[in-house]
Length: 310
View 1 (cartoon, helix red, strand yellow):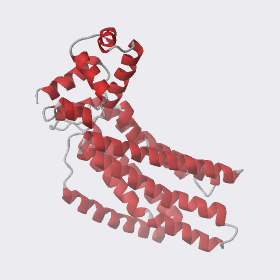
View 2 (cartoon, one colour; view 1 turned 180 degrees about the vertical axis):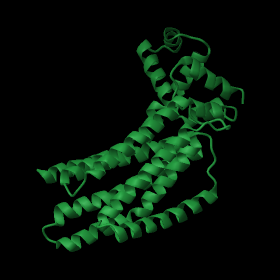
View 3 (tube, helix red, strand yellow; view 1 turned 45 degrees about the vertical axis):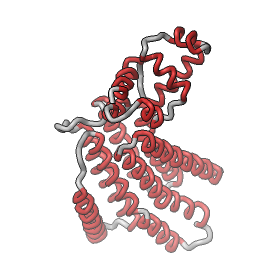
View 4 (cartoon, one colour; view 1 turned 45 degrees about the horizontal axis):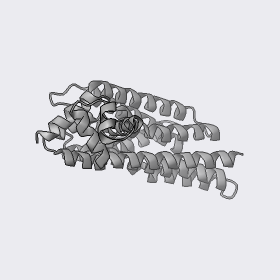
């Protein structure tokens, strides 16, 4: 029964990872902004670390514990966690970079050097002090280092999102506040579960579920919850309607409907003019809103008018 549960959770983890990376990649391809590349890299590093550090341990402990001596198994799982450490460092780097970009702040290249150097030195010092002055084993040391750094960089990312910079942020304040709250709640949930983990398999599986589910929050919110029309408005003055439709995968029929919406026609009038049903117009309009991340005709018309003045 346990093995079936693990197999199901692994399938869910793969689906979450693939879906999140796909959404981030889709946003990058349609919005053409560097911050969406950062989002995609964040997802790639995050889930790579998850499979290395957490699923690697789960597979070894579940399926090989009866065949490998306990001391060798412990060393192997610790090595897997350490092999994943570069990925989690780059995950937090991408998180800070992304949250900074969303709030309109520029992350300098020198920051990357100081970030990596400082974290490597910090981790080495923390590991030495914990092992030197406490009775913690290697795994417990790694666990508490992760908890501390996860707290530091999640709070830093939330602070970036809430910081009022002079530059115009890419997301509206409500969306930045929701993202910040989500980051903090995910971090607190992960850290709480990890604190109580003492080798219990069910707690480990719960943490893996929380970790992989939490990783999907940002791309899902950016795609389906945030008002991304601001991105189109930012770039609208440099776009034509044709290029706008191309970047958002607007079909020729949807383009016709957009033009009629901008001409002030109602759904019924559009249906009569284009010789299609009212429901078809509503379906096309819904897809247009989804592709352009608009919530109303007024918002859509604002974007289109900006693009047509190019």
